[in-house]
Length: 371
Image 1 (tube, rainbow, N blue to C red):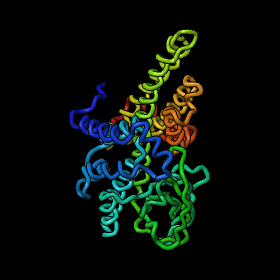
Image 2: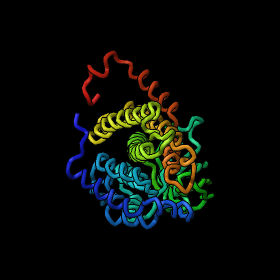
Image 3: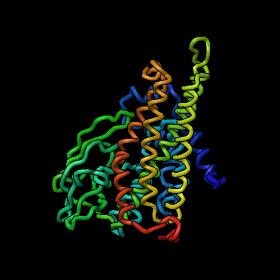
Image 4: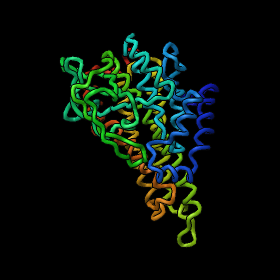
């Protein structure tokens, strides 16, 4: 199988790499950490100016109308440079609203404002909530609360999952400037602003069609895995560089068999996740069902990020936890990505349930791809 990007897809990756390299040096990341800013606002303006925030949004809605593969190429570079900008959240939310939100002028205006750089908060909390959704829609109004929604204090709009009166879960577009919205802001461990939101009889702008829940979930998993791929790739590269220079007993610690084995294990996990992610993204772009592939990729991403993060910290020793040194940021990003959309256990359970519900002997080989 050929997982290489096409020339056009590579052009997106190269543009993103050049942009993030300018704004995300270790010194500039350290400045951002200490600044208290909600995200890298100057870099975000450059992303908007270059159109990197519109890759997934349909052309009819004013976006580039491209696929998840192009977005993956950009997000991998974002992960490598730890660029704290809401690239995937903005366009997944905007694309979902454009695809499934109907023809209401307020919906069209909301999508257009996001394409121009306004922020829309995207919450995945109720899609994996073990106790059921914490938001409910009743008579066109939203009730309940959400925890630690990225950039919710800075956003004018939010796309959230809520329980409808018929018991199904729906994606709902709501204004955060509307009556009945209370926000309490904070900061996430990877230096991205978050906020708790309380809705009290808040009127909704639109309730998206049922297909939106599955689409947003699968796209979110692919995006988070793409970011994790970039974070881990650079984390491993820097760790290998460190162990070839750091000496113990007059030998580089990279020559020790245990360290070599840990680096090899990390590389194997990285490539295994890349293979699974490539299949998921291909199916998304081909509009094929991909629920089991998405759950499997999410499990792999969590394992990849947390395991490699711990190994990198371990071989760096005290340098790994020194906040004046760059390595600690990669572990913070790995942890943040791991809790963004459910644990590995939750997705393993969902995968097991899917297999139980699709108990067809030889289903992987006997059925056509569209089934």
